[in-house]
Each structure stands twice: as structure tokens, then as C-alpha cells.
Image 1 (tube, rainbow, N blue to C red):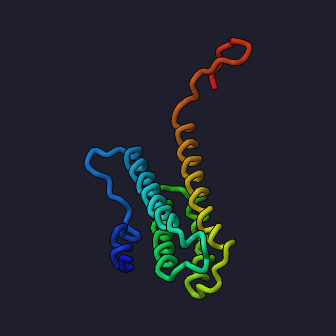
Image 2 (image 1 turned 90 degrees about the vertical axis):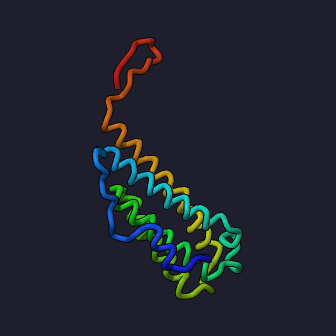
Image 3 (image 1 turned 45 degrees about the vertical axis):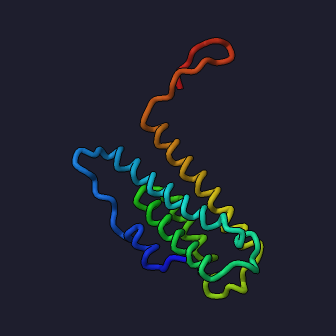
Length: 152
């Protein structure tokens, strides 16, 4: 397992991505959401390990890796303006902190919560980006059952 310093250095805490010359705010937001998705993918790769399905096999290193990936996801979500995801990361951090303090507290329910969080986080990102697209562009026309074309 990589050490904490190398995991943290992957994504510097508290440093928002600086816009490049000619980069529009929309491009910057897209890059921030992409960084959030990357952080979520890192979290997903950690839980794909078989130990998250079996609490007795869960190691301190795995729990710590999950905690660091969760911190990275939280930071990226905050920079991307995904407040709901950021708050969900804060809520899950309580469970992760308990597992770090006492690995023997790991039970199937906690492990399932850690795994389920990844799916929920993915949906939160999807909903937020779809909502932003909805507000940014008018709805396309669609054909109603009656054959009348209407606009959203």
C-alpha cells in the first residue's frame, strides 16, 4: 500500500485548479467535475477489493486508503460545487473514523454502507450535472402522444 503522503500529494488539499489561459468557466467546471469522477473511481477501486465484502478480512491499511480517498472526493466535490455529495462525504466520514479507531467494530452493515456510498455518489454527480445541463440549455422539443410538437 502506498503511504499517506503519496496518496495526499496526488491531489493537493485546499488548492483549487487554476484556470488556464483561455479556459472558460464552463471548461473549468467540467474539469472540476472530471476530477470528482476520478476521485470517485479511486474510491471504487478501493472497495472492489474482496475485503470490503468480508469485515473480518478488512485491514487497517484498506480503511485508511478508503478514508484518504473519501477526503479527496470530498474536496473535489466542494471545488466542483457539489454540496450534496460533499455533505454525504462528511456524513460517511463518521463511520470511517469509527473503523479507523476500532477495526473490530467492522460489521457487514458498515462494509455495505461503504460500498453502497460509491453508487450513491455516482448518482449524486449524475443528478447534479444533468440539473446543470437542464438550467444551461432549453429543453428540446418532443412529440406528445397526441402528435402535437411541444417545447419543454
